[in-house]
Length: 114
Image (cartoon, rainbow, N blue to C red; front, side, top):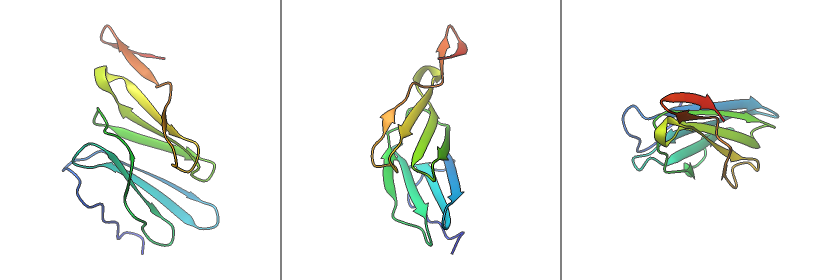
């Protein structure tokens, strides 16, 4: 049943983000940080699946995500060191991740696009 998500061990006030789409059924993917700052994930497809590590550990404290291609392509954005905006990418249903170009970096205290 939707609404019975159990994330397990997560620090208080942990960053969290979720994605949702519909192809032949409602699908939801939730991401959150664990106590070691790894980004964990669980999927909903007719019930919540197992919790697994997506990427990590993360450096910053904010997390956001976007998906397309029915969840096959995912981008996770987080705050990196020096206040950079970091991009982690998967184009294969989360079977592998790579670091993208990023979005913005801090130069002399000012955030500028990459």
